[in-house]
Image (cartoon, rainbow over all chains, first blue to last red):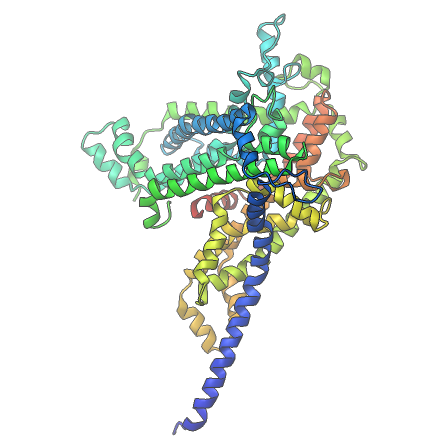
Amino acid sequence: MRLTIPVAASNQSILAIRLRRRAGTALTITLFLLPSLVLYVAFVLLPVVQAAHYSLFKWNGLGSLDDYIGLKNYQTLFHDPIFLQALKNNFIIALLSLVLQLPAAIVLALLLNRRVPGRTFFRTVFFLPYVLAPVVTALIWSFIYNPSNGLIAGLFRQFNPQGIPPAFLANQHTVLYAIFAAITWQFFGFHLVLYMAGLQNIPDELVDAARVDGANSWQVARYITLPLLGSTIRLSAFLSILGSLQYFDLIYVMTNGGPVNASEVMATYQIHYGLREFRLGYGSAVGVVMFGLCFLFALLYQRLIMRQDLTGQSAL
Amino acid sequence: MRISVNRQRLSLPAFAVCCVVASIVLIPLLATVLGGLRTNGELLIAPFSIPKALHWENYGKILELDSPFWPALLNSVLILVGTVGLLLVTASPAAFVLARISFPGREVIFNIFLFGLLFPATVAVLPLYITIRQLGLLDNLWGVILPQIAFGFPTTILILRNFFRAIPQELEDAAIVDGASRLIFFLRILLPLARPAIAAVSILATVGSWNSFLLPLLVLTDQSKWTLPLAVTQFQQQFSTDWASILAFITLAMIPAVFAYLLAERQIVAGLTAGAVKG
């Protein structure tokens, strides 16, 4: 059998096919990308740019945007003790998460990595609060802390029927820590699961070899497990800090920033003193500051701390 | 061979610690569920005891036909379906193009999407509110759905793109040789193969939408448009002393999430942590 290839005809038709295909590709690219790009620009990128723009104006959000005041909103912001308190609270929550929540999650992950009866049950239970809405967590913990018929008040009365139960959420000095307990309750399981996944990637042979060499449990954890868990720890710390900078739901529902602004964070401040008081320009300035902090932190952290993880494969 | 695990002794101290932590997690939940079965008087006296008689009337009151629970449930479901459905429909073609067709500017567009990973929706929520108002979408479920889709793009596109890229080019070539167009390859071959990745991003978006609070709080002021998180907080503010009913409402609001979790724990854990790991 002879294959006949119509050479002369093919050159032209191939060109035509190629052109048509290229046009088809361009059409595919456009049609496939356009819907998501339009939505993304309209609802994510544009608002960020607008926030920067609005923040330079005194604006109640209703009239025309014409009262340009330069950086005055930022000046006011950084001289407002309530905002500084809110900023400080964000940092306290981030710090507490780093020194309490994450180590606790690591320890639990190490414990669950041993031969514990009911291991899967515990994992299921520990992760459970993470799937609940922060609003639900906030209400459950409001009930726990409620000084008249809450859980802690009930426990208190068992032992001291005459005394007045503590009101952790109404006390300026305890409110932030009471909120932090609720935050930890909700989020530690998430970090725990990250660590458990990280631990699973550590070869048993390494641990066995260290054991053969006479290392005890603590030494194995200190010199083998924790260093090899490094990338997971860096990731979990990153997520935890970035999360701490933007807490809203839980605090808004539990205390609404009170009492006397003691539990205000940047996100609640933005809603209270921006939107609710019709100071959209001022509120936008808060948003820009939050954006700047998150962005700067994410960039620096990834450049300086997660660099070694990003060059290789993903963190887990 | 996993000898080392078997060789280890059962660790009882570890078990004890886990039991303590598990009760710290579970007691608040049980107290909430049981609290909904008590009267307010019982709550005051003995919030820890096993209820003597079960007062289903708290739950009954919330489940009455004219209670705010049902419209809120419906709104939450509608927003969830709209968000997850449209997110998948718009993000997967975008991820496909960004993964498998090379064209000038592709990396730029991809990086613009990744940019969204660096900051939360909270930072731009006031201008977003203005935009939604200008579009006339206040008190409209679309006013929540569209921004939620948009904020879902960075993680969704990242996860899907990584998955699409991992599928060998030979498969695409074979499909093209067999006469399939790119569209057919995408719909018939790539998407079914990407089921685990699609499951992960769907779960991420589902949980995010179901639990979302700030955006609905700003956009949906009319009671008939409230979602479950809004309705349950409003209920608590309105009936702030009637904790028995509030606890019943909280319980009903968290039941869907808890059941979904217990039914599909493995997928949900994988999906929720995939967002973190890839992000």
